[in-house]
Image 1: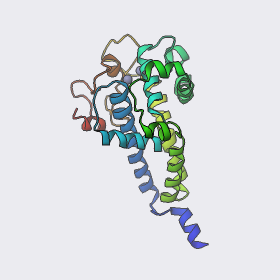
Image 2: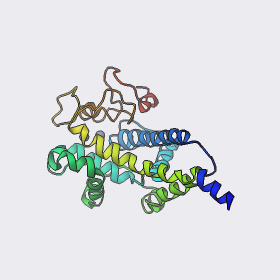
Image 3: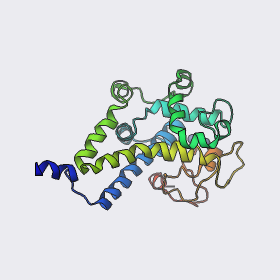
Image 4: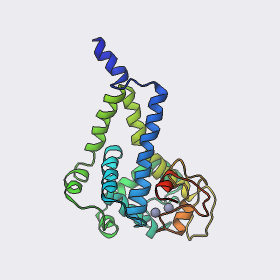
Length: 240
Ligand SMILES: [Zn+2]
Ligand SMILES: [Zn+2]
């Protein structure tokens, strides 16, 4: 009985709360790098090519930590650039209002992911191998369930909180902050024909995605910073 209670309270690792917080920050940041470097810069915009092993690591990691399907993410994002701020933009604050994009961005994402036309027209060139068809796409929710088991095993009941933070991280930062705030508040370096803004000059929290106005101005550039004014972990990987 004691052993069970002991395991429930701290899992295999028995970390203190601040160590768990630190680990959570590291693993969510790896997810952010997966989204910005793999899904966004490499897959959606073809701004850079990744080594096949790196690419597969990110596919596996994003399956575990987000349940997002590469083809869906890429198609929705390309459609956002193609239709920006007009009818058909899947998550424009101009079309839907900032409140809806900020608080219900993940819902808008799910809605668009179920639109076969979007996937057909904008989802080309994404992975289509055995793993994609039979595991990552077919069982897109299995990864996050496995992650829940891993979190509980490593951290005990606190693992539930770690998992909840992981699950909320991308819907909050990407669907809410970048797609919402990144088209509403901040400053502009470029007069791109949309309302995109740079939310903050330091791309440290969300791997450079803060610089959303720079990105809309130069969509296919792998580098989001200009004149070296920002630093990002993703940027360090890309040597920019
Ligand atoms: Zn945008
Ligand atoms: Zn983009």
